[in-house]
Image (cartoon, rainbow, N blue to C red; front, side, top):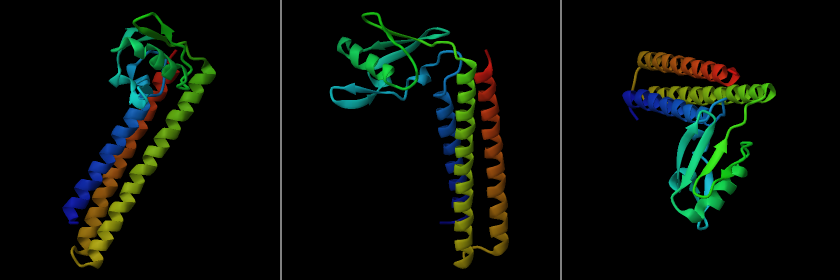
Length: 186
């Protein structure tokens, strides 16, 4: 692997880590409805676990209600069961052709739990970014040992990787702060 490949690969991995973290944040419930809250749920589709978004249409009925419309009428039961058993604390209402999922208001205690989850997920994302930094620095050291790059190039590479790390960690901090405000907003 070359010097430039290490730098670009590290940035790519860190970017993917940020995208994964953003996706995880989308699944954390705030005071308002969001279809991303249900998108990761698996439904039993004729014996195969399938994402709910592949068997039903997810829309917002209003600010606190998600509307789930299965494409096949016989999927109403499995979709309702998946939502009920999802550990999200939701109680779906089957209306015959559509399932309404009202989001109850969050208590202060539940909001504080959500903030702890956000901070924990943020810390995990930072650890992943730091692991990518470590891997890149190890690869740079191997290139120096193999005499493919100079020690000056290694130092430049490590400085570049550190700048990337700092940038992505500050982005994670900003995402955590924004989500915390969103969760605590009544």
